[in-house]
Image (cartoon, rainbow, N blue to C red; front, top):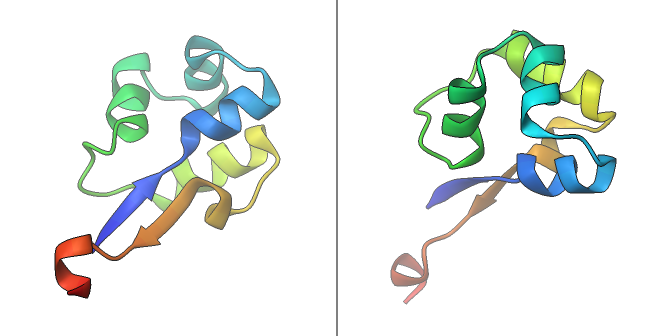
Length: 73
């Protein structure tokens, strides 16, 4: 099982660049990249709220739970 991060999908839908999003939510572009590429081990609720506010979406639009194919067998 894993959590898939769909920040890039919402960024494309809202036509916002990574640099602009990072600035508007108050994190570094490097930290946004870590989040976008599913390399983060955690996310602060304040960061998640800021992402939802700026991208005008719900947390479920950004985060998705998926079963690993190996576990399903």
